Image 1 (cartoon, rainbow, N blue to C red):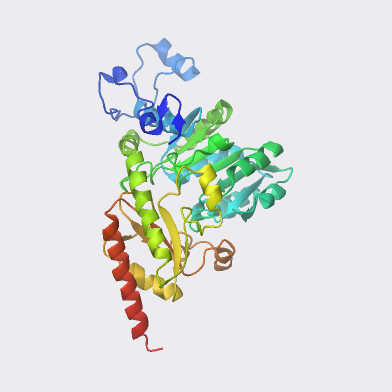
Image 2 (spheres, rainbow, N blue to C red):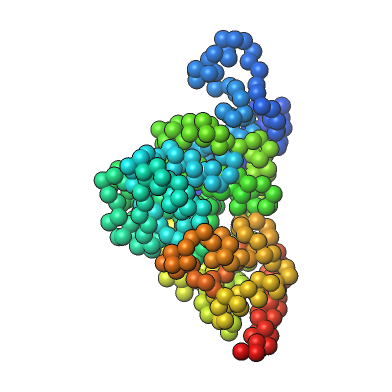
Length: 403
């Protein structure tokens, strides 16, 4: 694992918190308060003027939230971060900060469905236009940039087909045009990929996923490389009320303490299952950056510290076979999301990407039979046995089909 600042990644999870500042508390206290008292009127005025950095009101900043922001910023290699109530609040913060009427966005596809929908349905009403190119088409991304382009927005690995964006190439194209590269790093997380090191200006996360890792809180965060972006992003989040509450922040901080161990265990499970499943006679195809069969296997090796814990596959028998599989698993949970300690399986075309028109789904590589498996931290043999019995149920269902 690469070094970060004053230590390795596993040491940097302690960033942003000094027990000496909190009466010796080893765990970050939850500052469950809406407002903070000023010792004097002069100090209150100074805090509102920005010449003193003490807390004012939790929407504008909270010590628990600040500890989380500092921690994730250090992990990503940024100058600072702003925590948000949800992952989509993080996306909204970025779009509202960077985009004005008449602006243009270059994005990659596939993209998390609500992120794409925010641009197509809402920002288009405000006069913002968007062009989306394949995540794997670095030349197409550069060619799509116009004089009115104000942001290049990518997600890698892409949700849900695991295409990869060449971040170095994307950063070069954005830099040449004088616009920021924004990266949704939710799928990989900072343990496996740090886009700022590769040229990104802004990185965002749904911290609901691997950063929290326990499926018990929703949260988001935006990390900036430079102070000028951080100031603008923070102002947007605070003004629109996108900021998070201290209990959310405390839960995510607790999750980050085990981030490395969870990610490594889930990734090892995913690698073993993908190798096995790819050779199974019931599987038509499988996409995972950790397999040589992935068309961007070399890129994954260059820009990631590991392939992650999510893969996509298609069953012989298509949509109906996938439905039978998902209805037959017993250890794996039929649910959306990823990055938790439990394994989750879902059907993107009818679930996470259901709002994307069918023709556009196909254009993005989201086929009707695509199944996404987010592998968790269970015993890998239990997961293998669960998939084996579910695949047997699929075969039995196909045999029983009177057609």
